[in-house]
Length: 182
Image (cartoon, rainbow, N blue to C red; front, side, top):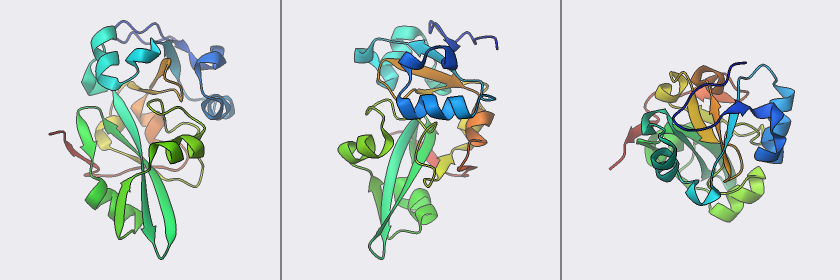
Protein backbone atom coordinates (compact mmCIF):
# COMPACT_ATOMS: atom_id res chain seq x y z
CA UNK A 1 0.00 0.00 0.00
CA UNK A 2 1.38 3.35 -1.03
CA UNK A 3 0.39 6.14 1.33
CA UNK A 4 -1.57 8.90 -0.40
CA UNK A 5 -0.25 12.45 -0.46
CA UNK A 6 -2.96 14.58 1.18
CA UNK A 7 -1.96 18.14 1.88
CA UNK A 8 0.73 18.10 4.56
CA UNK A 9 -0.68 15.07 6.41
CA UNK A 10 2.10 12.52 6.97
CA UNK A 11 0.07 9.38 6.23
CA UNK A 12 1.11 5.79 6.79
CA UNK A 13 -0.78 2.48 6.86
CA UNK A 14 -3.17 2.66 9.82
CA UNK A 15 -2.53 -0.93 10.96
CA UNK A 16 1.11 0.03 11.58
CA UNK A 17 0.09 2.72 14.10
CA UNK A 18 -2.51 1.27 16.48
CA UNK A 19 -1.50 3.98 18.98
CA UNK A 20 -3.18 6.51 16.68
CA UNK A 21 -6.49 4.62 16.53
CA UNK A 22 -9.32 4.26 19.04
CA UNK A 23 -9.63 0.64 20.13
CA UNK A 24 -12.85 -0.07 18.17
CA UNK A 25 -11.26 1.42 15.03
CA UNK A 26 -8.11 -0.66 15.43
CA UNK A 27 -10.21 -3.80 15.94
CA UNK A 28 -12.31 -3.06 12.85
CA UNK A 29 -9.27 -2.42 10.65
CA UNK A 30 -7.56 -5.56 11.96
CA UNK A 31 -10.68 -7.53 11.01
CA UNK A 32 -10.95 -5.85 7.57
CA UNK A 33 -7.34 -5.80 6.41
CA UNK A 34 -8.41 -5.28 2.80
CA UNK A 35 -9.39 -1.68 3.59
CA UNK A 36 -6.80 0.86 2.47
CA UNK A 37 -6.78 3.02 5.60
CA UNK A 38 -3.95 5.45 6.25
CA UNK A 39 -3.44 7.44 9.43
CA UNK A 40 -1.76 10.76 10.13
CA UNK A 41 -0.88 12.15 13.54
CA UNK A 42 -2.14 15.68 14.13
CA UNK A 43 -2.19 18.24 16.90
CA UNK A 44 -5.30 17.30 18.96
CA UNK A 45 -6.02 20.99 19.52
CA UNK A 46 -6.59 21.20 15.76
CA UNK A 47 -8.89 18.17 15.43
CA UNK A 48 -11.92 20.11 14.23
CA UNK A 49 -12.27 19.79 10.47
CA UNK A 50 -11.79 23.44 9.50
CA UNK A 51 -8.67 23.73 11.65
CA UNK A 52 -7.13 20.49 10.32
CA UNK A 53 -7.78 21.59 6.76
CA UNK A 54 -6.24 25.01 7.32
CA UNK A 55 -3.20 23.79 9.30
CA UNK A 56 -2.37 20.76 7.12
CA UNK A 57 -3.42 22.12 3.69
CA UNK A 58 -6.21 19.58 3.25
CA UNK A 59 -9.11 20.61 1.00
CA UNK A 60 -12.47 20.81 2.77
CA UNK A 61 -13.91 19.07 -0.29
CA UNK A 62 -12.07 15.82 0.57
CA UNK A 63 -12.84 15.95 4.28
CA UNK A 64 -15.88 14.13 5.61
CA UNK A 65 -17.61 14.33 8.95
CA UNK A 66 -19.32 11.47 10.75
CA UNK A 67 -22.31 12.60 12.77
CA UNK A 68 -24.35 10.31 15.00
CA UNK A 69 -28.10 10.81 14.85
CA UNK A 70 -30.85 9.28 16.98
CA UNK A 71 -34.58 9.08 16.52
CA UNK A 72 -37.40 7.42 18.42
CA UNK A 73 -40.40 5.43 17.36
CA UNK A 74 -42.72 3.78 19.89
CA UNK A 75 -40.22 4.45 22.67
CA UNK A 76 -37.41 2.64 20.82
CA UNK A 77 -34.25 4.63 20.11
CA UNK A 78 -32.79 4.18 16.63
CA UNK A 79 -29.27 5.38 15.87
CA UNK A 80 -27.41 5.94 12.61
CA UNK A 81 -24.08 7.44 11.58
CA UNK A 82 -24.03 9.87 8.66
CA UNK A 83 -20.98 10.54 6.48
CA UNK A 84 -21.16 13.88 4.68
CA UNK A 85 -18.60 16.19 3.15
CA UNK A 86 -17.26 18.86 5.48
CA UNK A 87 -18.76 21.47 3.15
CA UNK A 88 -22.26 20.01 3.63
CA UNK A 89 -24.74 19.29 6.44
CA UNK A 90 -26.64 16.05 7.02
CA UNK A 91 -30.36 16.45 6.43
CA UNK A 92 -31.22 15.18 9.91
CA UNK A 93 -34.82 16.42 10.02
CA UNK A 94 -35.95 14.89 6.73
CA UNK A 95 -33.79 12.26 5.02
CA UNK A 96 -32.22 10.79 8.16
CA UNK A 97 -35.46 10.91 10.15
CA UNK A 98 -37.28 9.01 7.38
CA UNK A 99 -34.44 6.47 7.09
CA UNK A 100 -34.67 5.86 10.86
CA UNK A 101 -38.47 5.66 10.57
CA UNK A 102 -38.69 8.08 13.49
CA UNK A 103 -41.09 10.87 14.32
CA UNK A 104 -38.21 13.18 15.19
CA UNK A 105 -34.43 12.91 14.95
CA UNK A 106 -31.53 14.87 16.34
CA UNK A 107 -27.82 14.58 16.98
CA UNK A 108 -27.02 12.07 19.69
CA UNK A 109 -25.78 13.99 22.76
CA UNK A 110 -21.98 14.12 22.99
CA UNK A 111 -21.67 12.01 26.15
CA UNK A 112 -23.98 9.34 24.71
CA UNK A 113 -22.09 9.27 21.39
CA UNK A 114 -18.73 8.90 23.14
CA UNK A 115 -20.02 6.15 25.45
CA UNK A 116 -21.73 4.20 22.64
CA UNK A 117 -18.79 4.37 20.21
CA UNK A 118 -15.75 4.09 22.46
CA UNK A 119 -14.33 7.03 20.50
CA UNK A 120 -13.46 10.61 21.35
CA UNK A 121 -15.85 13.40 20.44
CA UNK A 122 -14.50 15.12 17.35
CA UNK A 123 -12.87 11.90 16.18
CA UNK A 124 -15.89 9.63 15.67
CA UNK A 125 -15.58 7.60 12.50
CA UNK A 126 -17.75 4.95 10.81
CA UNK A 127 -15.01 2.31 11.10
CA UNK A 128 -15.62 0.46 14.36
CA UNK A 129 -19.12 1.71 15.15
CA UNK A 130 -21.66 -0.68 16.68
CA UNK A 131 -22.66 -3.11 13.93
CA UNK A 132 -26.37 -2.51 14.53
CA UNK A 133 -26.05 1.11 13.40
CA UNK A 134 -26.64 1.87 9.75
CA UNK A 135 -23.97 4.07 8.21
CA UNK A 136 -25.55 6.51 5.77
CA UNK A 137 -23.03 7.72 3.20
CA UNK A 138 -23.53 10.72 0.96
CA UNK A 139 -22.75 9.87 -2.70
CA UNK A 140 -20.16 12.67 -2.81
CA UNK A 141 -18.20 10.97 0.01
CA UNK A 142 -18.41 7.61 -1.75
CA UNK A 143 -16.96 9.21 -4.91
CA UNK A 144 -13.79 10.53 -3.24
CA UNK A 145 -10.46 8.87 -4.10
CA UNK A 146 -9.61 9.35 -0.40
CA UNK A 147 -11.80 10.89 2.30
CA UNK A 148 -10.13 12.44 5.32
CA UNK A 149 -12.13 11.27 8.35
CA UNK A 150 -11.78 10.75 12.09
CA UNK A 151 -9.71 7.94 13.60
CA UNK A 152 -11.66 7.64 16.82
CA UNK A 153 -9.10 9.90 18.49
CA UNK A 154 -8.63 13.66 18.29
CA UNK A 155 -4.88 13.30 17.69
CA UNK A 156 -5.07 11.66 14.28
CA UNK A 157 -7.02 11.48 11.03
CA UNK A 158 -7.65 8.64 8.61
CA UNK A 159 -7.59 8.72 4.82
CA UNK A 160 -9.83 6.00 3.34
CA UNK A 161 -11.10 5.57 -0.24
CA UNK A 162 -14.71 6.73 -0.49
CA UNK A 163 -15.82 3.55 -2.23
CA UNK A 164 -14.46 1.50 0.69
CA UNK A 165 -16.43 3.65 3.16
CA UNK A 166 -19.55 3.05 1.08
CA UNK A 167 -18.86 -0.72 1.06
CA UNK A 168 -18.23 -0.93 4.83
CA UNK A 169 -20.47 -3.32 6.76
CA UNK A 170 -23.79 -1.60 7.42
CA UNK A 171 -23.08 1.26 5.01
CA UNK A 172 -25.49 2.44 2.35
CA UNK A 173 -25.31 5.30 -0.10
CA UNK A 174 -28.22 7.67 0.50
CA UNK A 175 -29.14 10.17 -2.20
CA UNK A 176 -30.00 13.58 -0.80
CA UNK A 177 -28.36 12.85 2.57
CA UNK A 178 -26.71 16.24 2.71
CA UNK A 179 -27.46 19.82 1.84
CA UNK A 180 -25.26 22.88 1.50
CA UNK A 181 -23.90 24.31 4.75
CA UNK A 182 -25.34 27.70 5.55
